[in-house]
Image 1 (cartoon, one colour):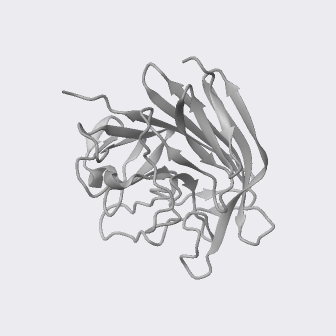
Image 2: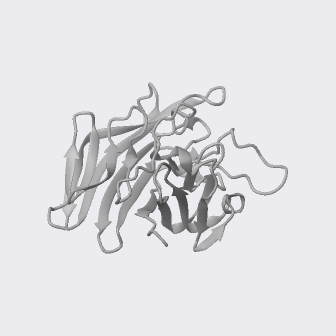
Image 3: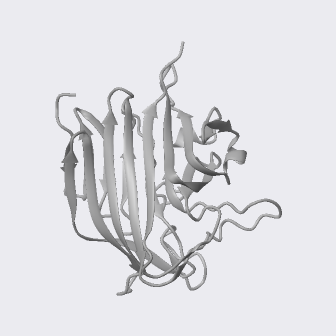
Length: 280
């Protein structure tokens, strides 16, 4: 690499991460409900994320959101009667730092309901990205330090009913809506903690790492790309490829924990985005 990594903050609030002519993606700072990453590119320039699709406009590409028993920070509309729509509200200007080959964005977010003055949570969020030129991988880091201001009973989506058998698998946490052809077309692959699994078996696993591999249309030979979520602490896996491709990894995928007021919760993710080397 010859040019130093750099940010490009545009008037629309999109913060672009750039590495010697390669664009890793952008962090959308000014979204009305929750800042998120989009687009998310591979080093070869393939866009993996899908932003605000017509079928689920609250799917904001690569995002982090939860729901409590009173506030919904995920869907952006009331699902149950009495639901309060939640917002992650940025406070002040972000701190932007370049350290060697890593670009770092830090900012504060207040989680609260629409029209409410009091915060449910205060978050110190750090988003960083590094380009590993030898491995040809963009590695994002997402760190959320969340301090509840009241006791919070985290909840699961009512769209995920209790099954007659097995475990209820929720989708809140860190999630990405993947490009269209990663769903419904077959040929996808999911790897959980190093083991390739059928999607139905992968969803509901407690793991430290999950990788989704899909194929890019309209190019021959067909390129394949991967995105990997990992965490130092085991997280629940939610993954589907029908009726669309979605991957999430979070603390409420398999349970509904109670977070006590003033007890900080630190949630850390690594997100690796790569192109699969071509084979003969």
